[in-house]
Length: 578
Ligand SMILES: Nc1ncnc2c1ncn2[C@@H]1O[C@H](COP(=O)(O)OP(=O)(O)OP(=O)(O)O)[C@@H](O)[C@H]1O
Image 1 (spheres, rainbow, N blue to C red):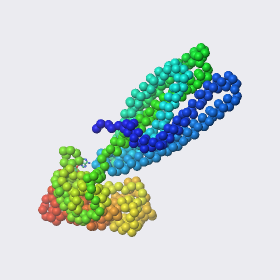
Image 2: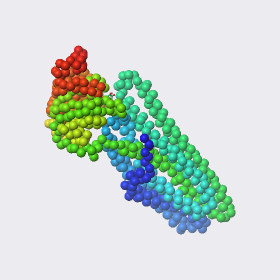
Image 3: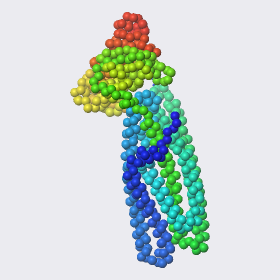
Image 4: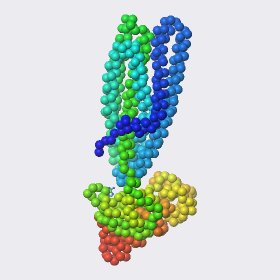
């Protein structure tokens, strides 16, 4: 894939132009501030050549007052610049973060199969920070610097064309070096963001999977992976440092050459009588004013380069296709009865590796359909298709007779609920976790769900009941308790279509019985696709699909499949023995 770069022009159009009023205000302020900065050098010429020579106390007063005023103007404008532009830049950063997060959430589930969550976090939080340098002080400083350099150059030429041209040669060489350096640095910065995201991504996983790591005594391996990551980061920073160091040292050298020539030629001209001491001093100070922004350009330049590199990555993300596809998904489902059917559905995650082959079956409203079969046979893929997380390569899935691929996703998913194996509970109270899909549910509804899922059976024993805080990932709850919270959440959401991935972990008989009862409550009246591991669930199912290698091998009720003494019979008798 060719790298897509955000040009200054695109950045200008999408970020700077909409904020033009502020940026112009910034430029206006910087122009005033820079104009005021010329007061001191010009005044010094008059101080030396006129005030001191003529002992003119009256003029001295005006001169001092004038310079004081200019300094005051400079301080006020620089304060306003930071206040207005930096605040605005931060506001824009928060707006952009929200936009990027919204975009990420709108991407298809498959996108997340291949993306590290840590890397995405970095895209959402860090990459957009570059805006600070575009709207904030970076760009304005650059423009201000250029204004100062041009005005100083004119004034310098006015004092001595020859001396100015002589100092200009090393400065031009420096400018060329600086421009070349930016070209080298930009890809390095771009890469840095990527490495940073990868390293953070892995680190997040490491910390999240601490039990597995410690359990397998695999700390060393993680340490090594991390070391390689930070080493890559170090190498990247080192590369950019070498370039910046070269730039800084060449600037020191070339500026030194310029200063020395001013000393030499200036001294010579004063002795010759073609330059006054005041003019010499003014020249030196103005030269400083001209050089400073050119040197500053190197840091502002790298800030802008970094900003654009971050925005490159943001842009890449913003250009991805969202899953909603509203142009083609035009059917709105206000009510759902719950019949679903798969006809001739095939699906592959990767080209030429079909995992489901011509699957066809019908589910009547409110039926429980159990998917059984060996690992990797395609059960989760069928459930993913039914949940509209995946789209069939060929064939059709219908909901109440409507082609699911034409149904508006939001309108379908408001009738959908999922209870997954490792259901995610987030930091917060048990109540918040249950209310999560329906934050506005009434207290009665909440309590009904809590009862139906037998959550009160354990929360009643907690001091704070439903308001007990659960640690990150619910570590303070047992597996069975977590499952019951997930079930209560689904009961409260009251979906018409339910995807249930039954947990494989075995629980003690009492918990098991409670889970069974609550699952019974949950599946009542809902079309349920269950990736079933428990015999009790499978036995109660209205329909069982035995999936092998992406095909439906057998289909029917428990009694029917047992009687036919096929694959299901073998699976069942094998499990029953254990
Ligand atoms: N995101 C993915 N990318 C590529 N291949 C995948 C992906 N998810 C699953 N597969 C492959 O598709 C096939 C079917 O997987 P699926 O998860 O549907 O099986 P399953 O029957 O649910 O297995 P299990 O009971 O172990 O969860 C497997 O061969 C698997 O390797």
